[in-house]
Image: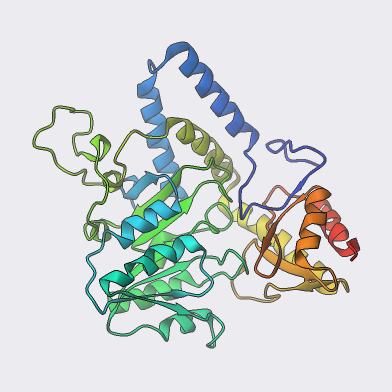
Length: 375
């Protein structure tokens, strides 16, 4: 039975939440209401819009377990936030940054671009040691300034032990940066338990939000280490005093929001998060992991399919990658898409990423289609 918030067309089985997710029904309704209000009244209700902006910050604070909404900045995307860190820190020649060789380009390109400042970007093979975390730690030395990692790897679904990494970094005075785009909205997340200095994520994947709006978390101490790279009216301390001379930088994370907020996106994102928070992230995670476990077991038992994601792991995610025994990935992907299974071509295979509202019947049907594809 379909979830009432996701009236997707019957022709589709949507298993691509690690890429771009569909909106819940309430999100579509929120956008329509906002558009109609703007059409009829213009900015007359702008004070209400500012209240919605404040509500979104509080929702994100809850989702991340951040100490304060003041630690939350609303940014365009993950890449923007990562660039704020990469070009905000004062680097010294000889500094190095430790990461992995499985990162999405967003968490690689900004760091590699620092090479002209004499900064080395080290990429660990996460399978070169007893645990993925130990593989990262093996590359750390006295010149390591920052460790940056995706909470869950986009292609394999490997989920990192963020608490273990955070404690390691804290003990060595190394800044810890987390690309959380494959975690937020799918699994529970606790910034304080991870001792994270910087966390960022887009809203359009597991959080069901629109593209073009994301979250950037900083601790007050880490925030003060970042030189600003963008300036505008919105990042002033006295935001609405437009004749403010001289002016001061906003003391909170709002200093990273240089210009007018994306009010349309804010209304949409807030509506989407309300569904996750009402459902409860513990319940969401349990249902996401139920589907991914089910997928792994079914793929492992199917003679036509080969599981690429780890079958057993201490920490689990909602991403499952596999391939066909005899059919090439490109042909299988095209076949699945043509038959209404929305998925992705990633990690040397096909990536399924079901969310909490997907049914096991949908998963079964998608796997049947994958297995019956022929050369």
